Length: 256
Image (cartoon, rainbow, N blue to C red; front, side):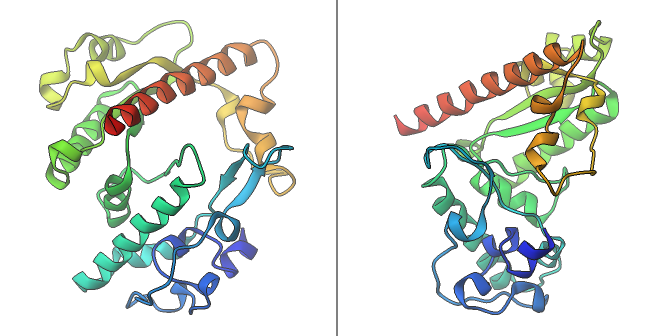
């Protein structure tokens, strides 16, 4: 990761020209955005291959994160903010030409980075725990989306219950699925909740040892083993299939 960051082969190059295009590194100046008219980086310059297959058409890549993207939260000039946002949108458009799916992992906060994610997202996935604090977070997220986005172009939101008990469904989850929270949250949570649920599992805990060898091997879908590994993998696969169907159905409606 440190090597990739030093090369600007990271998420920061999605927001402004960098050394990947023969420009100064964005991390060197936190007070302005470079507005050089250069093409966004292509996947071969910015993406790290995580899964290698015999076919070049089958790939799973990662664009490395970087702390210095915090600079965009402190920009004061509107033209700098707009330039960073436009660069990000153009960069995602380039990546979409090479991948079937682009996933953005963001913090659940009202920030410039959240605004960027909203600007390009075709669907928003909110993992929540079955408690009232998480439901309040959903209400806040929906409120932010409503204030920032026009309804016709607004990406639909899906909710997946995370960290649930394997053997029982909590009262809060039951109420969420039955529609009892829809009015209080000001959006139809009951229709947004995925059927799949992600159970609490030690296999989902973060483990750092050996990550430099093969990060992919640390994903639960690959390394989980034993009595409860099967149900966990079935749960992960089911959620992925359900979400994929929603994403591609939404894309098909837009194309039509």
